Amino acid sequence: MKSFIRLGATLGIAGSVFLAGLSGIGNLPGIGNLEAVALPQDQIVKKLQEVPVFTLTNPKGEFVVLSRKNNNASKPISQVGFFISKQDAQKFLDNRLKKENPQLASTLQVRPLSLADYYKIVQESKKKSDSVIYTLVPTQAQVASATSMLNQNGKKGEQFNGIPLFVPKFKKDNSYLTIPLAKGNERYIPFFFEKEQAVALLDQFKKAVPKEAENTEIQVVDLYGVMEALNSSSDPSINKIVLYPSRESINFIRSLAPNQSPAAAPAPKK
Image (cartoon, rainbow, N blue to C red; front, side, top):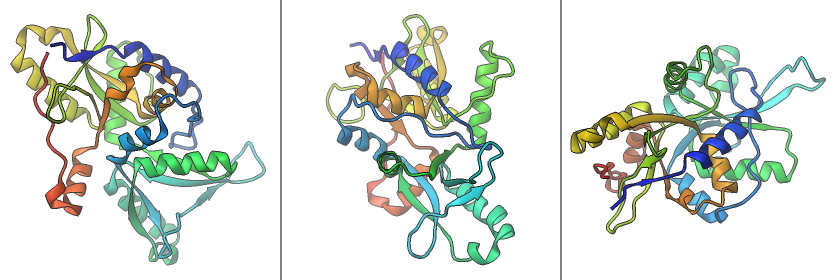
């Protein structure tokens, strides 16, 4: 049984077009176009529901909107940050906001949401022509890993802009390693928020099928490009994508529901 799916063209095109359309705000990536629909919205939401993100709220549960001057416009930019890492959200509160506005910071807390919540907020914002920008903040260590991978692959000096996802794949036919997630024969493509997770899975595969070791690699793609592909691709294999939260986020999920922790990824097959 084949354990790989060809999605290279789909994600490659979607990712590159999407990245070209991103508008950076400071060190934070902007929001791209998420309007055209391929998968039903409930399926997209279900895929994104498993990934936690973290933002800052006041006691009423309202988001903290930060404003900064924009040299190219008369009005300041208003922005709400959603962090991939809970630790990063806490550091932002402790190391920046408490110094800039200790009175405000003392009333704030780090609140967990899901990537699906973020997605729905962005969608509603587009409908209302909201001037507030809702931004995902990547983990800098993973951005550094993604940038290093780009530089090693001949794109020297290029910085990865976006939220990196790491995918084990095969070189020859540009297909992706798949894993089973439940009982049955269906297999899925794991997209990891940490390079280390992708490396661990690929190492398992190399031990199981050593003759394929030279034919494997890890590809880095942008989360925004994946979300764009979920919205616009007509490739039915796109529904096989599964987003794996970081180890930090998995531990956070387990702390909330000890008896409902995410299952560890099983060993891949080919």
